[in-house]
Length: 249
Image (cartoon, rainbow, N blue to C red):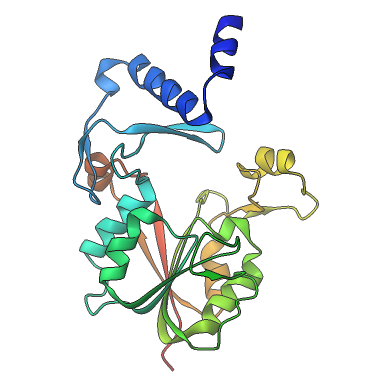
């Protein structure tokens, strides 16, 4: 074990992760080493495991384009039941490179936003978005709501959307919990990791996320990943896209 520790200390973080992923994948029983298809880049074969939130998600990441389960699920929705007229003016919070080409092609204007300078086109705080009212047609925020105060962020998203505009939202949810788990006294990164699954998460949503979105003034539609999609594209079964639309009236 000491030799392993010494070897790991001489590797870069990226190299350590690659070695561990290869070891984990090769340690699985042969029957569990399945091949999948990436709906974003077309890759077919074994996917890489993902380490995070106190769990290993086997087959979570495409080795070519690095898309994760939620990205491939969104691509499937885009190719299926998404509005075919396009998204108009599009604002993408915490942007993912693997989705940019797909979203840009469907938008008349595509802009990215992040709270950290240098990561996106715009520096924006989702709890206090410095954009005019009714100035955007479509917003996307994948796995962002768990990082912010949703009671502030959701009304802000509604405010900047034009009437009839759409917010596409994803976030980790424990659907069997009737209420979200949150505690404002949990402040340190270690404590947040223990309670919410990641050092920069501030809550873990339960099924009341639907009520929270509606309370912010949205009409809501759910898109749920089914078993056939999961088996083909290595999606998370039951994963949900929350389509929150500002009423047109």
